[in-house]
Image (cartoon, rainbow, N blue to C red; front, top):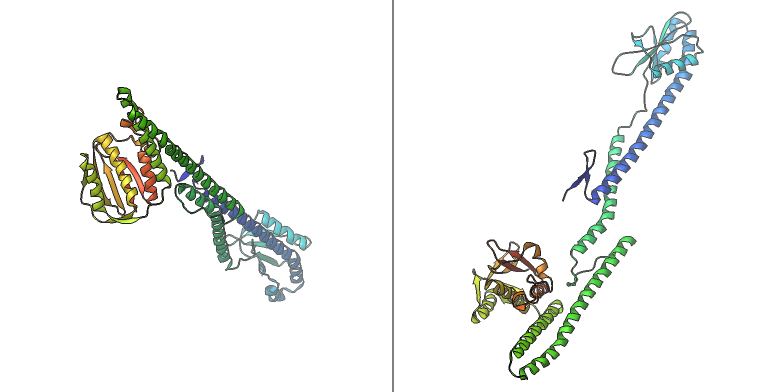
Length: 440
């Protein structure tokens, strides 16, 4: 499964809903935060500019008038007092510069000329260097040159702690976005996990109905659906059990009447057909009991004795059933259910291959794995899962001798669920089928 979806621009778009919502919220909030910061920056710039130009317009005019009226020898004493943070007065021609044609220089020049009533022609020059620096040159009434050294300031100074506040705000933004996404996505994950674990045949815990009203409503709907499915399956099995049970009495009467009839080829065929029907009914009852039979209690069994007893029962009737490898250890399970599971596996192996092998191993998780193997034709890989469904038969002739009723593996699967294990079918290398039951 791809981890991301490639967009037309070449960028990748995350495939998970969690990542997409997180990115959308984070980018949207970051853009909104950046827009607010930009508006604040522009507002501070405009405020600083208005303060600077206002200072030039009001204070510079007064300062030039004062310096123009003072004798040349007394002007130097007032220069420091008349200077401000963004400009200062210099007696003399100042530093050499280049003509400034920028809009900022024209604006400053216009403000100064407007403030002094156009009495002194002003020439604005830009001083080369790393610092943005302008000098306004003018000549006083007595012919003395005066220079106004201006250092324009774009914005008010930023506090040293402001970047740290910005970092904290971004961290809070990411955490809040993550928490919001988690609150929104977590119920979907729980619903998906509950759907994956859905097994109407097991009495598992219901999905929690806590949380927001929408989540609680979805959980209640899922639990109700789970109960309906379990109810429908139970009804199906009950119908099968009832029909199979009710058929036994008329089948028995028909068998007695057939036995009392005179010997003939038709009698033999009738008895054979009744036997087929009776075995089909017995399989139906066995399937119904495997689905709802919880009466057997678990017990500890010795694996070696248990497996040998099953193999000996078949060997006594001339069946080729062998135990492969050394069997050791014990298991805590339902003995009758496990015997029925293995018997179904062995019967299938004998029917299609003529021989069966039983092996017992321990997995890496210390689970007990019992396998029944054969060298028969096997099952196509695309039908392995379907083979464990009720009434599924690979052989479609409807002949019980070759195709059976299609309930053997379904019964084994039901019983495996009852003992808390798992069942797996797979084709062996070199041909044949292996039916594997794992006891945890």
